[in-house]
Image 1 (cartoon, rainbow, N blue to C red):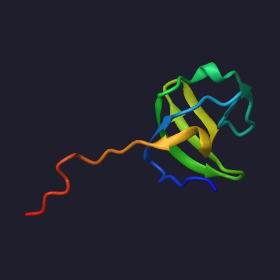
Image 2 (image 1 turned 180 degrees about the vertical axis):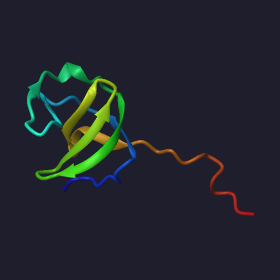
Image 3 (image 1 turned 90 degrees about the horizontal axis):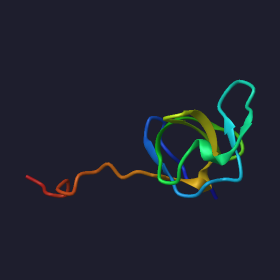
Image 4 (image 1 turned 90 degrees about the vertical axis):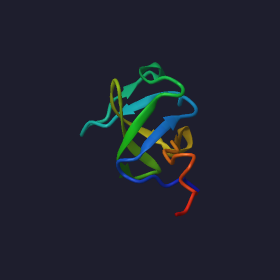
Length: 82
């Protein structure tokens, strides 16, 4: 079961895969050190096979949902009702 993300949302790398695929029309394999553990990126789109297109500082890559988590952007005081 893969986690679902909203396009445009921020995600964080929680584990490095053995390799990274570029999000180009013809994906190429890159070593995992093109991204860093804990690096944040923006979800671009959903791809077949549980992959997500994510824009990081060094480019856009296809990454399996098991290697990323959603970044919680909700403020701490958001539960106060007026």
